[in-house]
Image (cartoon, rainbow, N blue to C red; front, side, top):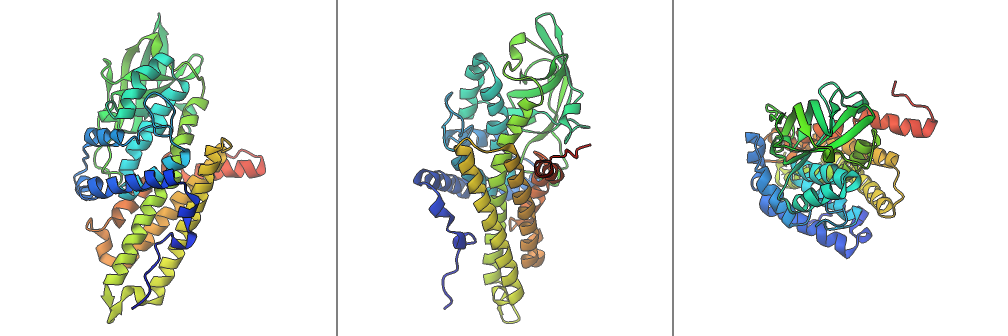
Length: 391
C-alpha cells in the first residue's frame, strides 16, 4: 500500500501559522460550504440563478458579513480570519465569495469608513445580520480600469442631490436594498448611500453570462434619482474613497482565488487516483505527478504570500501596492491551476459533475475584476521604478 498522500498544502504546514481562532473560523465556513453550497452550486451555475437572499441570511447568521469590521453588529475578526473565510467560500464558488466580499468589503466598508453615524446606524447592523443587502456602484460601461472618468453625475438641487447615470457589472445589484454609488460632483467624486426603492433607481439583471453564473450581476440605472442631503457619504471626497474600498475587497480575493485553485487540485488528485489508464492509476504516471507537484508548489507559495499579507494587515502596516502583488500572483496562478487540472480530468473536466470548469470560468472574471492583472502590474511597476505608465 502506498503511504497516505499529503494534502496539496501539506508540505507547507500552513496550519502552524494560524491561531486557534483562525482555524475555528475557517473550519466553520468549510463545513457550511460542504453542507449548504456544494450540493446545490452546480445546479445554480447551470440555471444562472442563486437564492441570494436566503444565502445572505445564512451568511449573516454565521457572522461572515463585514466580519473584519468593528461595531454595529459586525464580528470584528482579524483580517487573516476574513481571508481564510474568503478562501473557503470561493472553494465553494467564486460567486459566493463575491456576495460576501461586495457586501462586507465594498458596501459595508464604504459606509463604515466614510459614512455618517446616521448612515452607519441605519444600514450596518441590518447588513451584518443579512437582513439588508448592499451593492457598490463604481464601474461604468465605458469606465472600468479608469474609474476617474465616470460619467455618472450628482448635482445639487436645493438641499437635495439628483443622480443621473449608469453603472455596470454590479454584483448584488438586482437584490440590493442599498447601493453605494460614486458620482462626479462639482467638488469631485462623492459617494452616496442610495436606497434601491428610491424613484428613478432600477437594476436590471445581466443574463447570458459564462462566468459567475451563481451570482447576481446587474446594471444600475439612475434616472434623476433624488436623494436628501444626508445621503452623501461625508467622510471622503475623490477617488480615494472608492479605491480604499477596492483595497479591502482585493485583499479577500488574494485568499479567495486560492480556494478555487485548491478545490480544483484536490479534485484532480482524487480523480487521478481513481482513473485507470494503461492498467494503472493515472496518478502513477510521471507527467501527472509533475503537473500535481508544480500546482501544489504554486498553491503553497500563494498561500504563504496571502498569510503574510494578512499579518501585515492585522498589524496595520499593509500597503495597497502589496495587495496588488497578492491579487496579481494569486489570481494568475489560480486560473493556471484550474486549467491544468482540467487536463488531468480530460473530457470529464468540462462537465458540471466536477467543479473544475466552473471554477476556471469564474476565475476568468476574478482575474479581471477589482483591477485587471495589467493594472496591478503597472501599480507594482510604478512602485519599483518611480514612473507612472498608465497613460
